[in-house]
Length: 174
Image 1 (tube, rainbow, N blue to C red):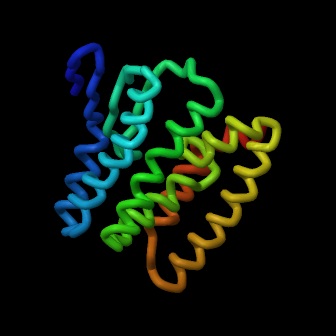
Image 2: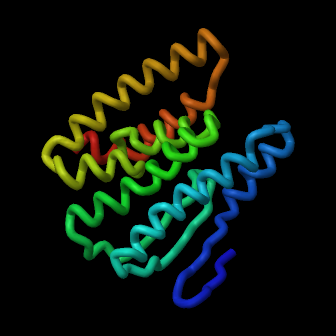
Image 3: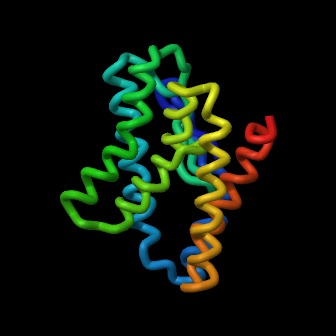
């Protein structure tokens, strides 16, 4: 479903509705907090874009989270601040409210693999090394995910790892 408001497309992907359905079905109690804090994360990106005079083209909610699309005609440093402001919002919210969801959102989003903010920052400043950095961190994340899955039956990090591996597979292979 798409809604256009003042030249900005707001897109709600069907996969996001599937994600919400599973959350409701399995009683995932933090769903509202995750959606709220993810929206505030994107608001951090959006505010910095507006400060730099750039209007977004699309705001999309999907199975993979929220995403902001815009014309990338910013300087490296302006792009860096746009990318940094989303995770920074989560870090500030964690510091103020001691809510672990914000800490998790911060840590996930600064992870140096595309399409996450950290991966985009690495690619912005170290384009020649971004593949190697991504590969190293995906291996470490996969190892941690396996440990958490087998030792504590925590599967969510493994799902994130698999998504990032699939997303980056073509780029890592060169």
